[in-house]
Amino acid sequence: MATSKWVIDPTHSEIQFKVKHLVISTVTGAFKAFEGNVETETEDFDGATVEFSADVNSIDTNQVQRDEHLKSADFFDAANHPKFSYTGKLSKKGDDSYTLNGELTIKSATKPFGFAVEYGGNMTDFYGNNKSGFEISGKINRKEFGLEWSAVTEAGGVVVGDEVRLIANVQIVKQ
View 1: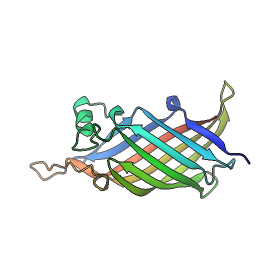
View 2: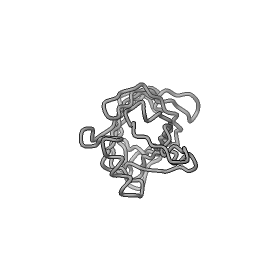
View 3: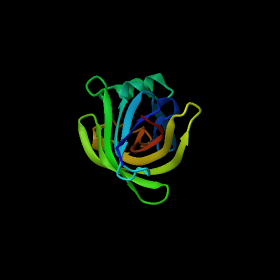
View 4: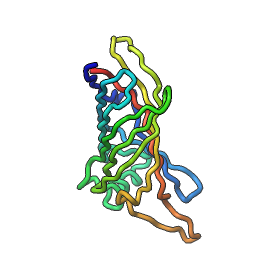
């Protein structure tokens, strides 16, 4: 089979993260600007290569002051590291389940990282575009990627948790 090329459809995709705040609740954020592509030689995406990047300046936690802090050198340092990226390879595990193993780069740290992937299926849209959907999830320790800022409340509570859950619902379109 020939190689098939796919790109992320940003109007039908979302990239989110979740992190504990004060250890009692979860704050959700998203990256609004991102791009990515998939290349595969199989109909079922087994062995497909994946490339993805997100614009750090597009971060949105629904609170401008927090977003600006996340863009600062305390966290992502968007002035010097405007994007984070991932490259990896899909491996089929079951009918609709895959693992995505590769390298995640945030700031100047690149680490091996794996995601769990659930395949949502394939469909042709109203315009004849061949599309496939995936739900992707994983957890990182933010400090391993240089997102070091930390504070403790007077009562001893941690302001921001170290574990960050990454969730992406992605629709790709065949080129």
